[in-house]
Image (cartoon, rainbow, N blue to C red; front, side):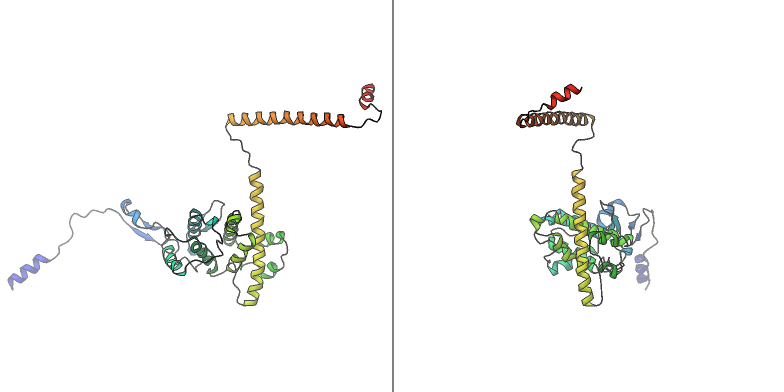
Length: 299
């Protein structure tokens, strides 16, 4: 018995010794691990994309947001999907946003997106399908806050522009993000075969929710016109903006060279005008009157 007692005493774990406080780590659902030693940071995602367990079917109020290049405040998950879609050449893939992806692949990607990760090598049609699904599965459609009667009465681009100004800031940012995404795609329609109408047609059912199927169908047609008009307006504005860009750089040497070219161009234009006038004088039929002579006599 004495030997057993001694063995048990020898096996008892004593209190810790040489304790050193290295770091105090806490976890926040939005900001991830706080105070984590730098050597562990690559293995742990810094920020969760959503305060919920999923990034689909939840309000944007519970999601991590970021600003895109156009100032739209949108969920990070949308920006990640968009960047990956562009990086993989999705803008130039025929039928993008019209052709559906593989369901089994989509389920896998959804699980990864909930962790804030977009897997490598995913089919672009799967990526575009998930963007549409994100809008479709929102608790409330981004256009549902608009008076449906007012939307149905819109007949022109001006009417649609006026009515979307009634959107709250969060929904307005999401709509603007989606419209610019569609404009990016239409700029390559000669390759991807997706016109403004085609894209508006596939996006419209994902932008609003209505209980009555017949009403929902009629409203979706009007939403299609809304998206089509806004996308065409965005494309025109881009074209105007690009045409106003001055090719000269800001450096003094380039500005001087540019000014010199403009002056030479102006001289050439004057010379061309004089040549045109000279040619006109030569081919002018004679009527027996010397107008230049009359002018000289008057002076």
